[in-house]
Image (cartoon, rainbow, N blue to C red):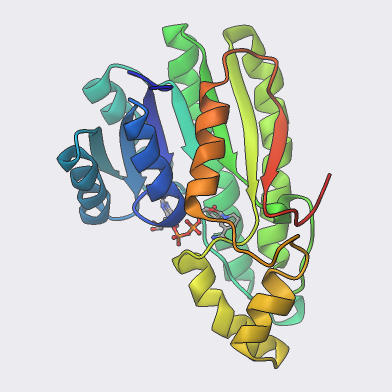
Length: 260
Ligand code: NAD
C-alpha cells in the first residue's frame, strides 16, 4: 500500500484516465475524492470504489468555477481530514483547423485545462500549506505538452501551458514540501479519443483505421495504445515519491512517441 491514508482529489475522475487513477489509488490505500461535472456520475464512481473495499466520495465540481472548486476541496477536507494529493486531470478535446476555430471553443478549452488547473492548485496548495504535511500535485499533460499536431491548436497550447504552471508550483511549493509534476500520456482509448477518431477521419479525409495507424500511433515504437493502467501506474509512482528530488518535471508514457 504505497498511498495508505493519503487523501487524493482527482478531477474528471468519473471517466477514462481519472477513473482508473481513482480505482488504483484506492487500492493503494488512498481515500479518493471523485470530482466531476455531474454529482450522479461522481457518486457512481465513488460507490464502485466503496463497494470493493476502498474509501471514496463524489463531489460535483466544474473545474472552471471558482466557488465549486473551493467548495469541493473544503468538502473533501471536512470528510477525509485533509488533502495530500491533487490530480488535475479534467479535460476535453476540440478538433478544428485554426482558420475555423471558434473563439468560444478556444476559451472553453483554456478554461477547463488552464483555469481548472490553477483553481484546483490554489485551493489545494492553500490547504497543504496550512496543514504543514507537504503534498503532491500532478497535472495530466500529454505528449501534446511537448509536440504539436494539426487541428489541435487550443489543446496543444493548453497542454504546453501546464508545464509552466507545474514548474512555478515546484518552486513556490518547495519550502512547504509540495511537489508538482506533469504526466504526459500518448493516445489512450477513452471516450475523449473514441470521439476524435471519426472527427479526425472527416477533417483529414482518411479512414478511421488510418487515423489510428498513421496519425495516432505512427510515432510509437510498437503501434500500441497506452492504457489507463499505464497512466495510473505512473501516477502512483509520482504520488508516492518520497522527496523534493523529483519535482517540476514531466514524464512521458506513450510507447516511445516523443523521446526527450
Ligand atoms: P474522458 O473524456 O474519458 O474523461 C474526462 C473527464 O473530465 C470526464 O469525466 C468529464 O466529465 C470531465 N470533465 C470535463 N470537463 C470538466 C470540467 N469542466 N470540470 C470537471 N470535470 C470535467 O477523457 P480522458 O481521456 O480520460 O482524459 C483525461 C485527461 O487526460 C484530459 O486532461 C486529457 O487531455 C488527458 N489526456 C488524454 C489522452 C488520451 O489519449 N485519452 C492522452 C493524453 C492526455
